[in-house]
Length: 260
Image (tube, rainbow, N blue to C red; front, side, top):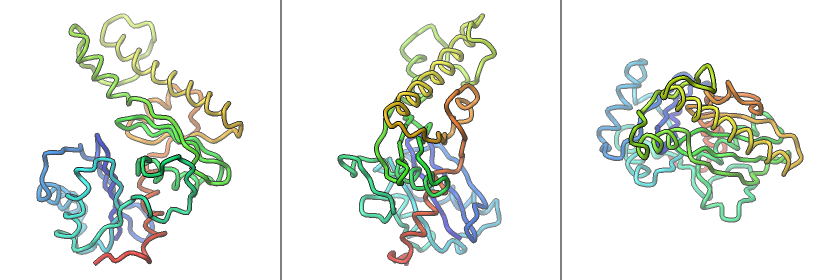
């Protein structure tokens, strides 16, 4: 079995593939204070619930945008599973030309998504990933990573509103029935949700004008389904795009990597 790990600023997503198919996946909150042993216990518990033994994991690949957690997760794989994971970093074989000015600045999750999206759809794409930040990435019809934009994430915006406006409460992020709300909670929900839909649609429309290729728009990330409901520009939600990208990169690099 293949273990894939996507370490983000807000969540860590684990997935297990067996014979090329995703058989299980889990999403945990990212916690900088957890130790190697605590993360190992969590991982082992998740696998145990699904009747998967650590000894059944033969290889692993991980992407990480939280540098302090990279080495701890490498240690988890080495110490508790007995394997050295592939790490998505500069120099890894992707099969995708990167047109970014400085490829080392590019977040691992963005190139992983790009590889997965082009492998699946084989056409020009805009990939919107709703994470701690919301990223917009353009992939050319030739399968080149051309670049993109970064905006503050939805939850960052919501937290900032709560923290900086003393009379406003912390609210659940759901889509309200009306934009003209009749109470403060729904007014905040409307402003954040519909405001963010407008931000997403606005950026995508401008990107399409800039590239002139009519790309397909894919949304991924934890809050993608919420924004998709109100969006005019998102074509499809692909919840497991990042995990699929990690599996693809594993296949491209497994023959050149020593797992033991």
